[in-house]
Amino acid sequence: MSVHSWARDVVQDGLHDAEVQGYEPVVALRALLSEVVRQSKALREPQELAHELQFLADNLDDERDYAFMRP
Image (cartoon, rainbow, N blue to C red; front, side, top):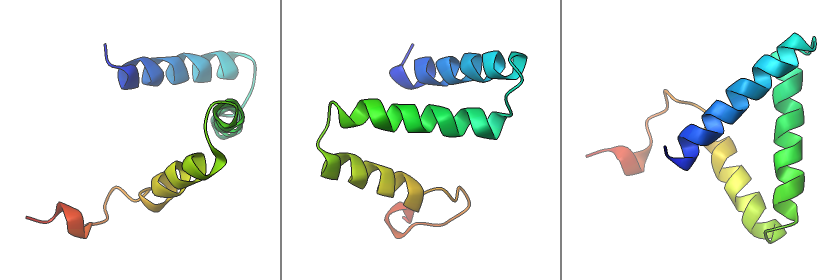
């Protein structure tokens, strides 16, 4: 199992647990994201983490055609 598959499973299990406790998925995901960022700040340089988060934010649109992907 890849680390990405493991992470996907952890998040899906967490969302299920949150739903059982009565939390909305958006609220649970926001809390998970905040906690991941908080813990990442303890292990990484702030600028490095900010660049990664910016890259992820810039690439949210799955339908967007990026120049570096064109043949």
